[in-house]
Length: 196
Image (cartoon, rainbow, N blue to C red):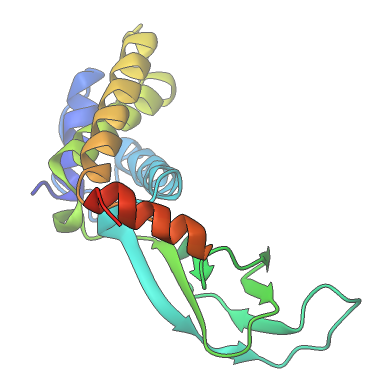
């Protein structure tokens, strides 16, 4: 799998810049800009879709909470690497995010599935890495390039690779049933088995 430096270098080459020796160690103006853009683009892409490689399921620590109004009874601390809460168990439970706190009416334990800030590029799928390359090229073409580097072309390529990556990611798991209605469960069983 590609390293963060390799991903950034592919994007820099697409907009006409030379490669960096190391994204983390290089102190050139290009490297400083690349680090800032890389982190923002990566977080944005991770939060936009429930990527299998960045999914995390955890039980949250309960916080002391003084109930205000009738809405929520419990508060739980979200992890520091949480970019977006995908679901709270049981599925369909109502909740609200307030800063880094999850508010709900679920007694402990509160179990959530969330999108984590995944910085280990060896976890990325090749399609996600290529989508990130085009996303970075799109951003670099407006921030680093003094010439016309076909921003609209990079945008089109980014969205194409992103859709391809999402489709492949969605094929790596079975269907998710979020309806705990017993009649719906029986109907799913019938649809899958073909008989009652």
